[in-house]
Length: 330
Image (cartoon, rainbow, N blue to C red):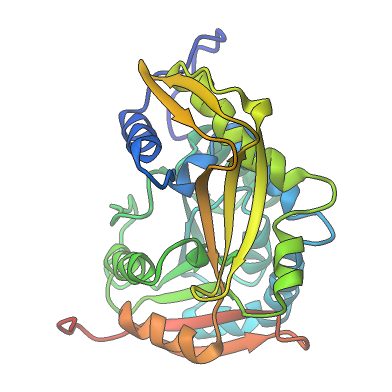
């Protein structure tokens, strides 16, 4: 068995989780602002990660099935370009479902999944190890927004970063560029990056994808409030909030919000807050790109676009990029 958990088996007793100081700081800062906002990375506790996987299966959510089809078609070309024995580093690995497609074309690869939720990471890696018993899996529990030290020998080994799901769209342009530069630092020189990027399209299709009829995305969004109550001693009346998905034309993005149905008061980590009816907590951005904007974004992050694949409806793009030579950023 080549899979090793990220940490020893936890003593599971149902105790209240230890407070993550970064989570506490982000939540208190975000709720204290005039325009309330909490970073989307805090969606992904165990329950949030499970709900996101459920979102990818709802009929309205086209990105997953479209990107999956593109991977089935183009994974062999990726493997031929980077080498079947490359080290595949996935940023925000989740359940690693799409990774299985890639690994089938790279039978001698080493797989390094990076995810902020260690419990979900261990579970996904165990499933993957059962499917690929000869695969070397080296999980890393970390926030991939910063450079990550990889516990694998880099040297002359080919490195392929994998960032599917258009997660890059959750960030502003400046934050996305910072992340791309951080990935380049993590992967080292001469690396490749395979990235999924969602495209601009009819706003009604976009809104439906983020406000599905089954209400799974609403549960995912509201789970953030439940996590705050559970981990930070919050008293947020979750039933008094509803999920909102909006298209922001000027910023070319879908925005997710939690709207207070009426005036509410609540405490979090010993601090008191008030929200008026109709006031929202901004929880996520999902930026959409045109092909020319994708190329510029990658270039600003130190990557040169090598291949650009899309589906027949041009809903979604799969891009293979190579690390540019060392240069001073403007």
